[in-house]
Length: 152
Image 1 (cartoon, rainbow, N blue to C red):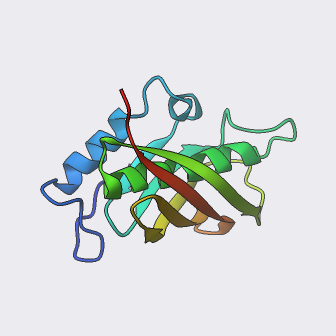
Image 2 (cartoon, rainbow, N blue to C red):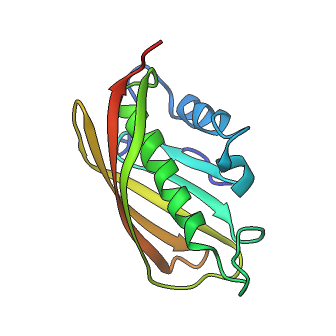
């Protein structure tokens, strides 16, 4: 596992260490679809969020990574990244996802790197690059997220 890399290019949220941000991200996984996919957050900061999933156990019948797994990985990264920006007390929900699959993957892991294009009061837009373990680009995407206050 690659640990957090706090730097000037990707600081954690104000008042939080990079290690704490990463811990909070990974503590959100149990009991969710992210756990079922074996998702692991690798980096959490304001400039980018990175997470990965194993290909094994997440394939379609031909032995290739299922496209829905890549979509779930990207939406999870963008949603958590939006919550980091907007506040973990806010409700964030993906409302549009576009994903282009560029290369099939049959083993190892895929890692999604999400970078915010826009984070406003009510919406956020994220850009994604997904790579395999050899660093080859396997998918690109964009996610729009709705930001709302939680209601009791």
